[in-house]
Image (tube, rainbow, N blue to C red):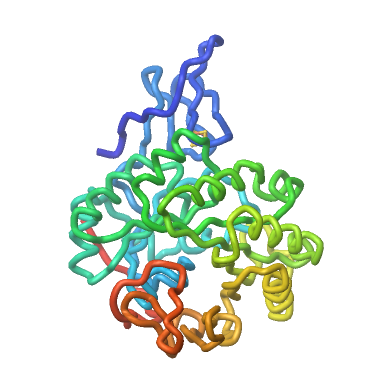
Length: 354
Ligand code: SF4
């Protein structure tokens, strides 16, 4: 069942067929694959060639996605497929998606099988991650639907590079998302990711109109996207367009893929970015990929108490009620809270399914 029909494409006058899923709008001759490599023109239609195929499965902490306001402490069944519709020179998942551990687990699993496995493993959600679910949206939506029937939620970790019609369809099936906002300049997007910033901002604005809980992550790369002026502009845009409650994660870069000549992000850069975001008026700003208890703690906007204390992916203290209110002052924390905090911890457990 690896090859399935898709809906978002149209024929062009010049004989090519255009895939309409993402702003690349790949125009394909018969037998050609798109930039993402997993969508292909076959018999004058665009098909997805990786339905039900995964690069491997792991149970992760939800904080790793990262989502800090979505079922804290819970386990999430994470998986990805192959390919991507961005071309980031600094891809941080390259080692994960190509690692031996994942390779040996390469497996095929249908939506029902996956949902059942998530339930069996005690996961409260499944996450489409490691690579961007935009390119395997048909598979991701079916998995999400199968999960919903069992009370398990679906999480998309995405760069948000998607066209409006497929975006609307896709997010109707999704409960939570983390959108990678890779920088706040078109120049960076063009040169380093081979994509466009404006399309990603449109996705963020669209999400604001939905019930999807979403958080934003920016990987800070020294000298590339970490200047004060750019960070100011980014935070002001987020505040104006998404409001003060959208959680923002600044995570640390480590040299990878085609960007091995740039040093890792100094912890001071993360703290500086966090300060700028707070000063702009964003209320939930976190550092990531480092040990930084202060930068990873959620403060209650009502009374200032430490509502959730974290160290990397570990929850050290939890001061919310089962429905997400501050135990000190009753303030309703923005996010999705349902029951006590999970106890998964920081473990990463590779699992075999299918
Ligand atoms: S989803 Fe893939 S084939 Fe379709 S436009 Fe984007 S990169 Fe091209």
